[in-house]
Length: 425
Image (tube, rainbow, N blue to C red):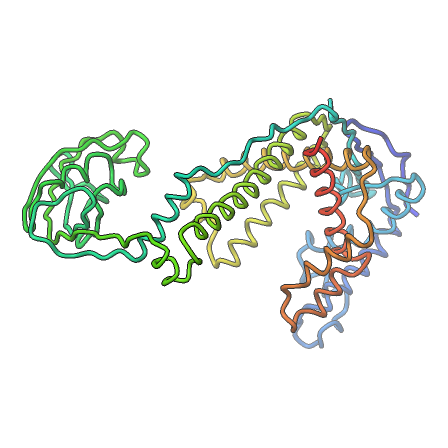
C-alpha cells in the first residue's frame, strides 16, 4: 500500500490526506493503463489490443496515460482511507497531484456539513382566507357565453364592444416602428388587448375610414425599443361587426351541456375556482415555508461542495438543451445571458439548493420524520400509474426497495410530511 498520511481536519467539514506511491506501484498501474488504452487503439500490423506496450506508449498522449494511471491507483486508496478512518464523503473526492516523482497527491474529502436551522419551531406561514366572489363567477360565465357569441356586420360608426377588422402601422421619428404593423387584425373594442388609448381611438370610425393618432407606449412595455416612446399610428377599419351575446338562461346552459340550470353552473364554477385557489395557495404557502427555512438555515458549505452542485446544475441545462436540439450559445442569446452571468446564476442557485437541502435534512432528523412502508407503496404505485406498459419492467426496477427511485420517493414523502406538519403549526 502507498504511504497515506493521517487525515487532517479542515474547515467546512473537509478532510485532507496526502498519499505517496512507490515507483513499483506506479509502474504496475501504468502497465495496466497501457493495456487498457491499447485495447482501443488500432496500430498498423497488429490486431486491436495485441500491439506491444512499448509501441502503445509511443502512440498515446502522455496526459491520457497519466490520467488513466492515477484513475487505476485511486480506488484502493479511497477504500483504505474511508474504512480506516470511518469517513463518509458526500461527493466525489478532489484530487490534486503535487509531485510526479515520487507520485504524491492530496485527496480532499467533503463530509456532511454542520447545519443549524435557527428558530425552526417558530417558523410560520400566514394563512389567507380563500374566497370566490360573485364577480369571479360572472367573469367565468361571461367567458363561456363569449364562446357562443355572434358577430353581425353593421354599417354605422364603431362603438364600444364592436369587433373590428383593421390594418395598422406605427411610425417613430419618421420611420416605421418595428413590431407595430398588422394586417387583417381582429379586435374587440374594450378588450384592452392593445396599448392604452388605441381601442378608444377607433370609436366613431366608419368602415373604410383611415385615421392617424399618436400614442405613448407604457414605460414597462415588453419591447424595449418602444418603452415610453410616442408613436403615431395609422389605422384603416376594414369591417365593423356588432357582437351579440346569447342570453344566459337555464335553456342556454342545458343546450350546451354545462349543467341543469344557471344556478347549478354557477355553483360548479364557484367550487372549481375555490378548489383551484386552495391548490394555488397551498403552493404559495409551501414556497414561502421553504424560503423561510432557507433563510433561517446556517450551513457551512465547502467550496468543493458548491462547485459540485454547480456542475450538476450546468449538466442539467446541457441535457435539456440536447433534448431540445438547441445549442448553448443560441440559448444564451435567447435568454439574454452571458457566460459570466450564467456562472453567477449557477453559483447563487447552487448555494440556495444546498442550503435548503441540508436544512430540510436537519429538520427531518430533528423531528424524526419517516415514511411508512404503506406510504411508500402508495407513492410507488402513483409513480408507476402513468408508465407505458413497455417501460413498466424498467420502472419497477427503478422504484424497487433500496433502488435509486425508491430512495427518491422516500425523500419526497418525508419532505411532504415535514411541510404539512410545519404548515399546520
